[in-house]
Image 1: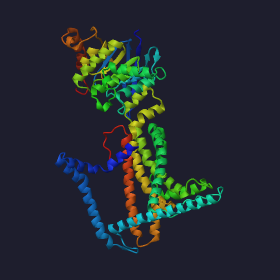
Image 2 (image 1 turned 30 degrees about the vertical axis):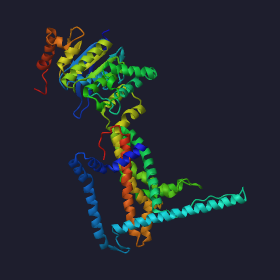
Image 3 (image 1 turned 90 degrees about the vertical axis):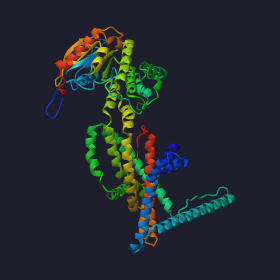
Image 4 (image 1 turned 135 degrees about the horizontal axis):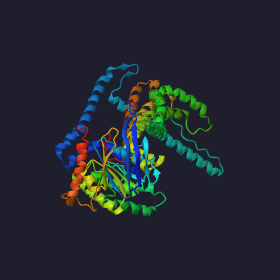
Length: 339
Length: 264
């Protein structure tokens, strides 16, 4: 796991390598070229974007005031950080009070009934990010658990592939907004419990994510498995490997790159779908944050929504890097160039 | 004795959009135990198909293959195959590649220690013990093919089937591997069927050379007995009259009687 973390960090900071080498004095002109490619050009692109944004945004005036530029968005970000800290302090104070109260009760009467309540303050922007990440990971994990085995089975057997192919093709383009009402109704009907382990809004968003991100993983796994080198299949036949040994020893290692390609596509879809699903399902995540700010309609709302937009983009990017690092970690072919 | 392996009236047809294509027509061949037989012919004459039928990877449309009195219907480790492009699992080391075969074939028959010794013994036979922990992409083409041979030998097959095993190698590496193969064959005296289109290789290694006619509907054109004493040495044989006679026989078959249909 530590190796995995290191790899993902390295892949994010790969642009800094030429600086390090330049400082050491290795092949200076080479390093300068690399720096231009991996650092200067991206920075130039971002700068141009920020300038255009700052210049054009004030010209667009909405009912909530002008569209915020980079400076206002940055300020809103700091506000959100402050709000988070204030909320955390409130929570800490609440727990301290509760503990003191309970201690006093116990002092007076050792058999006193003690109530421990959890703090029910407002979810801050950062709490909502955590909820979103947990929801998307659960939905994606469930999709993986369904899609990869199904993909392997249908990649191995043409009959199964032909049987499920029309369903895949029909369900693949369905929008999350169409799934959500159905998922909501089914969850309300099936998930009845006095002490629910999950909130219904969480299940609704999660299952919608699962339904939408199943398909790329399924299709890519099936294609990867169906294209295993014929010679290796012959080796397996000559050795008379059993069905599961065949999958485990030959098919899976061979199709890992394709499976991961599918998983990364799925994950990108999952993250996009999640925001839409949270808006409608009112799951306390980033989607709900955007929706609430939109409904709220204060002069800060557009800035706060833009903070969410960048947070969504950045988190999506970081999660994809994590997947890439995991692929490099699991894959046997360490020399393959992955991007 | 001479009925160790028998191909009897083997024909095969492949379905194509323009109707069935007959690749082999009534191929019959008897091979005795310990014999080294080469199949030679132009590309596309169905040599590989013959081998695949013996391996059980293809099913003959007519006729069949009998090994030690039993009909062959499906692939199995008693007919180990050395494939042209090594077919090692690229994610396993040389040792692990052989281990996969040994664990499968000797499941419950060899304990851990015995398996390890057997794997190492076979890698030693092909002179690859020093690189046992290397993965296929870390070793040369010749070395990969050696590991492929070790994997096949480790299955203790009744027949060793080799599909142009050295076809993709350069001439010097090929000579090394041919020497190794002769050494192994004189040690183990196993039955080998090898496909080749290298005339020198066929004469040097084989007890018999089976020359195939051109397809479609290919069959056996001629069979040449190579009566040269073992062990054979390529340098000594270079000036040997018998050797050159056998060589000329095969060349005449390939280039006079069965001219390459594509070259023509």
